Length: 284
Image 1: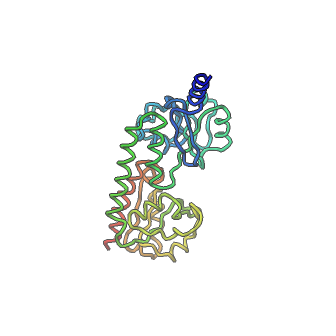
Image 2: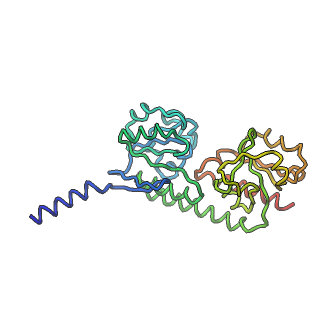
Image 3: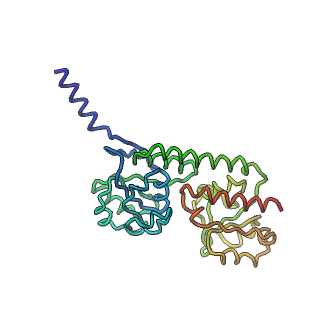
């Protein structure tokens, strides 16, 4: 009887405990019976995270604008991040869906869950979360070694920039997200964390919203030493008519959107460029 009970418990534990488990960015534990072989990515940044984690060859579906690395352009599309093709996703028979909680429609994500598809939310809000998500995705895909190396390299790069720039003389910066209505980021946003890494002070960092709307007059009053935008050049040119420190000294800087707006390992490239630009403003 004891032997039977022991075997029963062993079988029960084997059935109950998944082979791989990771905690997503909402705090949910996501477990799989074996490492994922077929993965669907529901945001361009997630696609980049998966490739960094060594799971690129396992991605069978991505959303529009998943264009990095170049190999991702060959992967079948499953709609846009804000309008998913549920039938297409199901037809790909994924054993893991990696979703963007604030960007993907909640109703469609709930539908995928109701169909029994494991959903892992990857939405880094801080730089350290990018490294953590790389490790988690590598664990779920069975590519732990490559993921750990990529996560460590990213963390080391962030630490190096911090040592080089974060303690330098602060430079006040206005970051323009959108011109009409005029939008920026607060210190709750990962972009603002990059600014701080570079030794910059976000002039609207204390506002409570993640991406607050501000007025042109409030920017003029703040009188930033530099203005940064990832939009078209005309956005920056529009500021030249105003007599503020950033325009007088020619500190109007552009960062490619893909290198600063996507919470992926490439944000480190954007950070390096931004730190160099801010250092130019600091030197005058």
